[in-house]
Image (cartoon, helix red, strand yellow):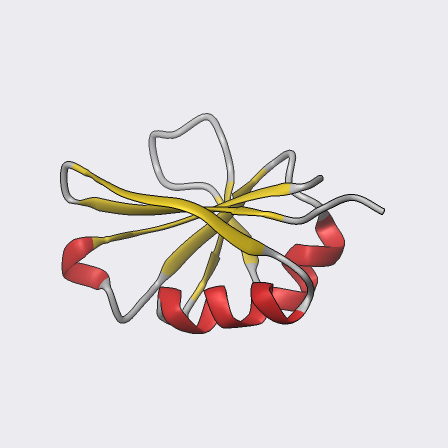
Length: 86
């Protein structure tokens, strides 16, 4: 999977950070130390880490991901990361 979305709430910029969904690469989620959670009332799961986004972005860069874009959506910050396929 060449794309990863990383997001956090503006008021929670020190963590936790959302790093994936049910379709995310388990190896990448394991590398990030992410845990799969389902919030009460949601019918989907997400992967979260306790670290701030900056540390997550640093880890992804170390394994070949590069930032494509970043935006703010309401009170949420979102980074789109991409890794070239071999």
